[in-house]
Image (tube, rainbow, N blue to C red):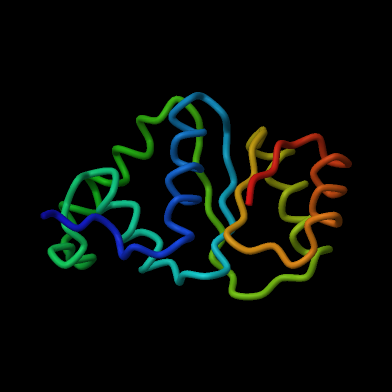
Length: 130
């Protein structure tokens, strides 16, 4: 049986962010739970159907193919992999990305205060998922 990704709970959110971009919604993904390498490895595994244990992030051809795959999406998928951000930093990051990249959807793999993050989404006019 093939194993795509690591099996972590947050991977379904990463794939949801990918699907939003694939559906034409510019999306911003906040990955607080996974470092960039783990996030990228998980996405490569699921999207390109490569077993996670077979992925070598030093393989320039693989990385180029993955980047081309992301660039071919109808909308942009951007991601932030900062371990810890305040609500103000999250709000400011969403605002900047909305202005610069027309972000409409935001996915967060961890939320401490759902009421506050919902207020941020409402204030900035974005759809938020967590």
